[in-house]
Image (cartoon, rainbow, N blue to C red; front, side, top):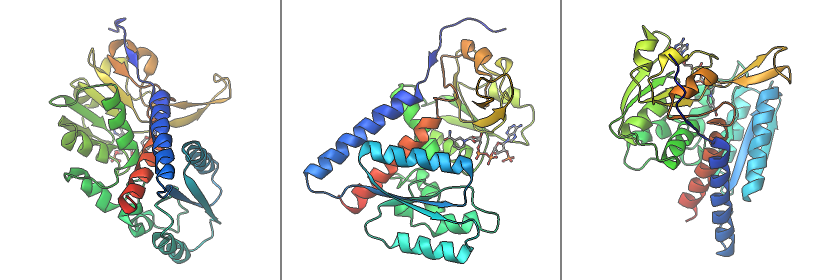
Length: 295
Ligand code: NAP
């Protein structure tokens, strides 16, 4: 049964704007002190429309906080070897503080090989094995951006994680897996990780004080799968087309927001929840990379 409790809609756009303003002020301060302005380089291979949009948003974000940026575009026919040479060059370019290689890459290029070539102290997406592993150290280097964004949302809404039961649905290298580790080691939560092979998913999700979903299947989480008063964080973003949407398409999360929200204490909408936080984390990581290299 769905009740009509009041819930807080977590505003990722606002928190992301707050973080950008904090970063902009730090950049101003650095400039006034004659210190280096952060410089982000973005490598884009091919002409995938969605990737282009993500990259445009990252460039816009850099401009809004006063970072320097460099866009490096390559045709999707570039060989893996040539791309690696460019990465080697950026790794050794002292003026670049952090860089990202926008995914996905063409099939003939190994994402693992390319990711592992990135210098961990410039890996502002936090994708390398070293940064992934450093989550469980006392002093993480650059944290995986999406999970970092989720942890910031929880922190800035004063949502307690210590001793809570967090259930993460989705165990990918980019989202679910690092998030589970951060919730365990930084959030001190007790964490259950669910994935494609989990039996009776609902029995796990119903036990969650905090339910975090990163799968990419719209409507996967329905109201009967959520405990009354739970915090629900929806990381899923899937573009769905259909005549019922005013633009002919819509971006949907994994959670049936309309029916789940009334059961929650806090919930993120899609869009406008976790999405804007990933870029904010990228900027935070770039600032951190700059401050580590040029205090
Ligand atoms: P992914 O690599 O495809 O991983 C999906 C995960 O979900 C896998 O662990 C998979 O299990 C699991 N899964 C699949 N079907 C399931 C089911 N029926 N029940 C439970 N678990 C299931 O995708 P991803 O890169 O993590 O992305 C997931 C979603 O988050 C996508 O919608 C993506 O667009 C979104 N995302 C958003 C942001 C953002 O900035 N907002 C950032 C990253 C990702 P197995 O491991 O067993 O295959």
